[in-house]
Image 1 (spheres, one colour):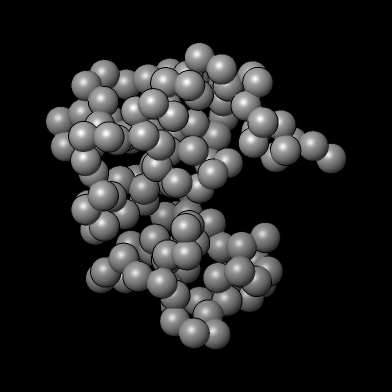
Image 2 (cartoon, rainbow, N blue to C red):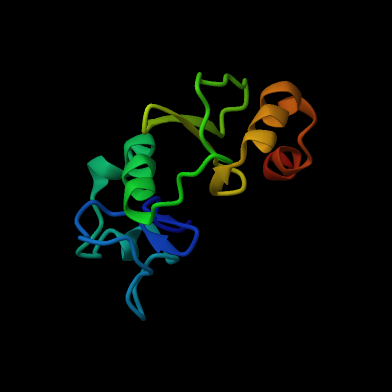
Length: 124
């Protein structure tokens, strides 16, 4: 299992001053025993993914009109995260490990039960 602070090839640790890929040889994609030794690993931050994603948004500057909602969306999918940001809301998909466009988020809100990616995630 990779480090929970590692998303989309980037280290989201609040201990880093910039949003950047991990250093070569870092333990991000190794076992918990390995990544917990990383100087950037923060157990309390790892449990608050919504705050980390919001911080990552600010550092990356990806917020644009294709991501920003005026009101929060709701989806019954447990991998759907709504993040308050810049006077609106951004949505994040934990299955895809990325921010959703408005179109994608609306589909997730309406059709989460038939999402093929979500089905793959829970297939044993």
